[in-house]
Image (cartoon, rainbow, N blue to C red; front, side, top):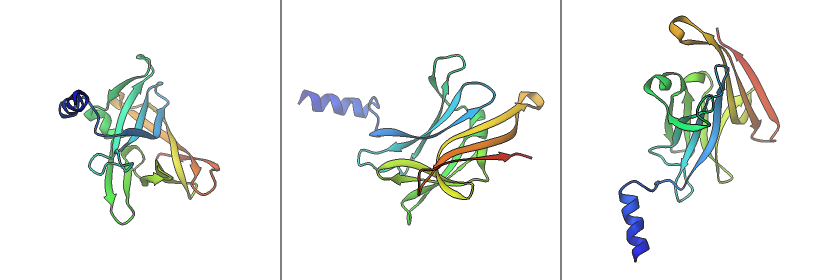
Length: 167
């Protein structure tokens, strides 16, 4: 009885996550420093992706803070934010990164694991990483030169990578 009461108190106060787990979808690495942006799927206890809050995006700060987690700021979301919409027919999510607007993807469960699927070299691939090469521009705002997509083909597991120059 004490365990049930304690669990209820922790749940109601928000001390316990409503998600069973977060599953890493992919990361963004940048030429600027060692910090990375992580994109995780919020997976419910019933092993489905949470429809109301499917994605958790945040920094892991390796440049100065030993990998500490930090939430994306409003300014960060202009570059690393995203839009999702639930596709009822397919039971997955349409997902577009602001950093890679021209490469829409889907997020869904594949063999029970959350994955992001994107076209790399015109092949459906599980996205693992995006690398962004940039240089400092006006007012210290980075100007992207190119980005690279890294993943594995959904059908064969073969590695794929593609560089996309930004004009």
